[in-house]
Length: 130
Image (cartoon, rainbow, N blue to C red; front, side, top):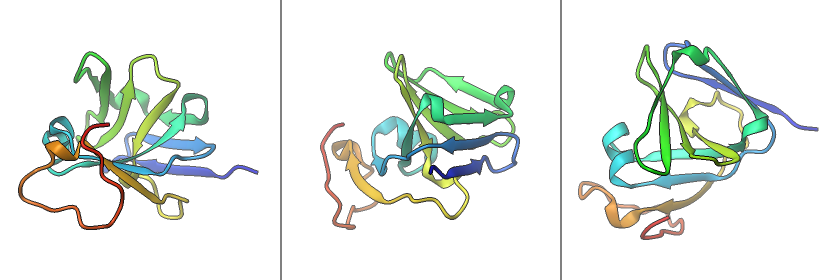
């Protein structure tokens, strides 16, 4: 039996529900993620068909590269999604979920781009790129 994992943006204008498994949390330290969030992304993935978004008209999509786009709440600015073009899954910011998810830490990507003002010391695997 699957559990539904729910979350939202800061103001509540956008809600997300996942009725299916969530991938482990991946921490992305690329320059784009740092500039959007001020530090790095912490995101889980879910299959497109398992995700329901409410208030979708409040989501603004920014095509940040030739391969992906980023979704955020147009009201409060909360970063919510990263979606590879044509992908069968979507990344959802781990911090958007309400407490009680099965999320576990996975690994770090784009560590060669990480900010010079912090260290990664949690012992998780680190990869130079994706």
